[in-house]
Length: 227
Image (cartoon, rainbow, N blue to C red; front, top):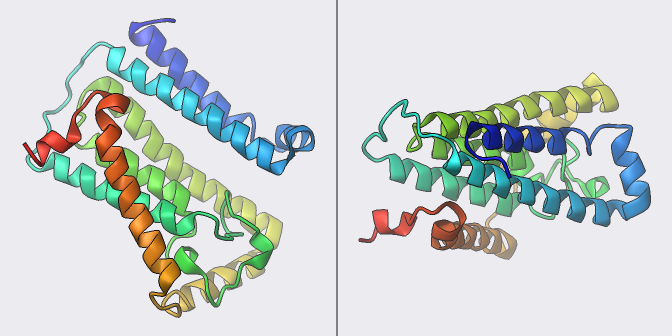
């Protein structure tokens, strides 16, 4: 496998291609027809995680070119961003969301009980942006700035592209009406057992990521808070 900047460029290109090609209109229907919706989702997730792991390793192996030093409290910013990202994922998991991608049984979406969709149209992409932005603060070298900055830009651009696609598919008026209704009812649901379960699951995921971070990224995050 390539090392240095060549390896980083190859991993970055693979990341972009594997996130662009499989979801294109000519390719995705062909894959879904052969793998099924569940099979496509599992295969796409496995491929994404594998390429992400490659890119993380390539960024660590790239030449160190410092751009800034971590500011005071950088680790706390990252931890807060990760906690919010994990909560966004927990509250979005297995919920219908016709306004974004990765929705589950979208035909069951009720704009009068929108869940997190009333707050975030694209919770998965928002989680990606939070993860990338939170990690950008303490990682001021060129390779990680390119990687995490690219992730954040990818997430923000993806939100705009999905909004445009959904408006085209649903019609501008229907899309705007659904967005407005979901926003109007975002406080309609109380903190029932499901809400508590999702809250606990999100915080547990954040704790798990802190625990395994030394093996994922080679950085013992917990030691920065509990020496």
